[in-house]
Length: 373
Image (cartoon, rainbow, N blue to C red; front, side, top):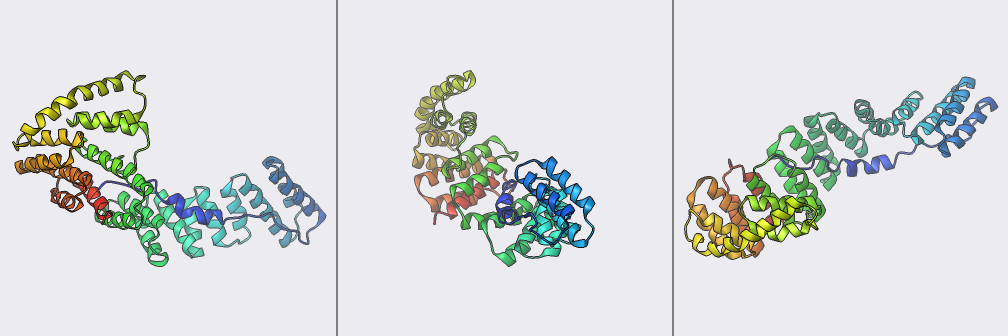
């Protein structure tokens, strides 16, 4: 299934590692005045945000350094200055020149975008934080299959934390591992089915290419999980509802996009939806009895919030077979969810053909139902 989690938990996974990174100004030590005074000046300038003056002072101290200890203090101060200036690659290079531990170098190289160096350093460092850097660096460099392995290893040692599951799902998505992605996403939603998690999942899912019927069903799921908070999404939801012969839904959701009076096209959409909704609902009872027209009736009932009637009409439409049947099963399931009949809805989603272009969104709806008991 082409879906989710591309932006993901990268930030959440690395937050603890990077927050713990502190490149401190070197303390007092037995260094000559020729070295010590410019180092003090460098520290003061760096704290004041004057990077140019700080580096100039560091260069002065470096030229005067004679002993290994003095050269070490100069490198530490240089790293401190570069770190405060956001020049993480230069900070890492200074520290690496004096044999700093890999656990200090890896986060700096990651922040600098030097991912190969970050991976190499993190592999020398070991530990959970370093595993995160390795896995996320693989993602950043497009080595998604390596990232899958790295995150699987991390989860085995550190546990199925939501951030790690999210990143694993992203890697599986990018590597084309549909089965793995589905399994991980299921675990993730069962661990954390919050609106925020659904929003992350569905926002990225909606970035994939899909046909209008599938996209509209995805918007319904976004609405169901509280994942819509942008006017443009409500507007797109309404447009798709009209395209898919659900004017009643368009009437309900378009106002959530805000004041449409300043947008002539959106205002016309609202007028069109309002004009079509009542006639569509009036015709629905007769259409619902005929499998050939029951899909249209189900759409009208669904848009009007008459969910039991919609579910019954969609069940009739499903008797036609083929693409229409799968569409009827999917939207029949949605109507049943809205009617509160989760068991019957689950059966409808499961009945969507595995080869159908609607299967991916049906699986997401089934996943939602599974979180409701």
